Length: 109
Ligand code: HEC
Image 1: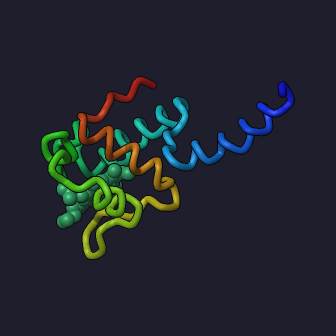
Image 2 (image 1 turned 90 degrees about the horizontal axis):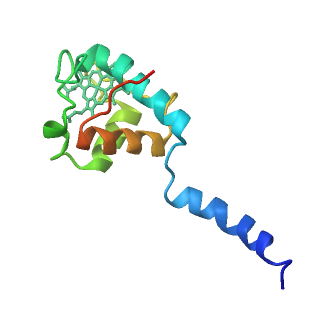
Image 3 (image 1 turned 120 degrees about the vertical axis):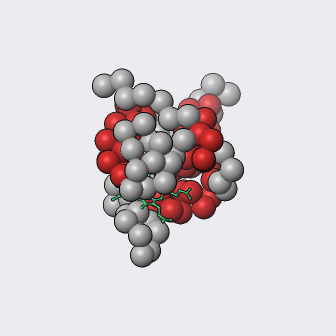
């Protein structure tokens, strides 16, 4: 039945995207710039710490990913760490946390 496949694809694709959403490459480049510039403002140019704590792989490896995602989205009340929910989706924050844990990539733009 050659007519059936396209319909199936349309139903399956959105589900797959929601389950394991990775930002598209262009957005990944934006996220790298954002972290290097905005987060680096407090966490240091090399993310080795400043006003904010180090976000190096060594520091981030031990931290639970869900907690770090929540911190990035909602901030830490009573500290200078702001919430980034207006600017970042949950899957984008999760992507940033994954990158931080393995050593954040350089801004190539
Ligand atoms: C205005 C300053 C500021 C900016 C901008 C900022 N942070 Fe923070 N951040 C802090 C401070 C201060 C802390 C430590 C708060 C505390 O005392 O626990 C912190 C803590 C954190 C933590 C928890 C670290 C840990 O070891 O538990 C993470 C993760 C984090 N920031 C990620 C980010 C990311 C990602 C961005 C950019 C999207 C960002 N921060 C931007 C000030 C900032």
